[in-house]
Image 1 (cartoon, rainbow, N blue to C red):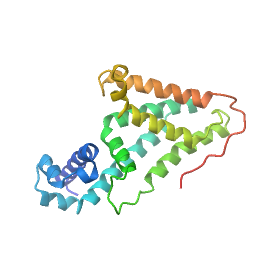
Image 2: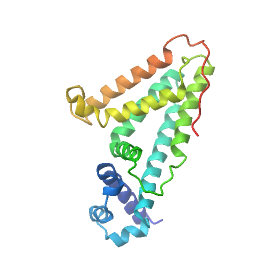
Image 3: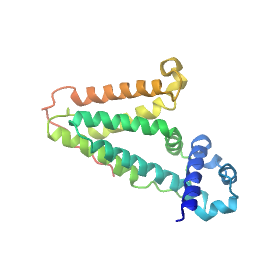
Length: 214
């Protein structure tokens, strides 16, 4: 794909992500995306043959970046607990940089998605990457015996809440949404929760089997 075409495609995905997060799948109009990108609606179909294809591409882009973020954090040097902290910080930074993605997933959970859309395996693969990391730490007796999948889902939900509903319920705690100070406060809290969960109790007790996602 030529450089110019690649740039246009990336711009379409960027604008579509913002529209899908703000208006949802059913509320997003392709002509509005094309107008903001600066192309004709017909030209948009050169890159994505339908709105559903565009929706899938936006999600795939998000999954790909999330996987890269997770793998980079897990490949850093340091103890398992330090890697867990690095993973939390990297994940919070990524969600802060793309808050619309979290809104898209929340809307999807409420049924706002193409009627023929089948959830791809990517979320399960990403969850399993982190679940396997925690389970490995438990087998090495450096992490406490906590359900790995439940912990990962808890952290994902917590971060999503902090970047969507939290600022509405407790604006004073967050300060300026999206600011460096607000992001640092979120990182500190989530990292503290993860550390306490992984260090809590007797780390040499029987560890529950890690339940991979389907």
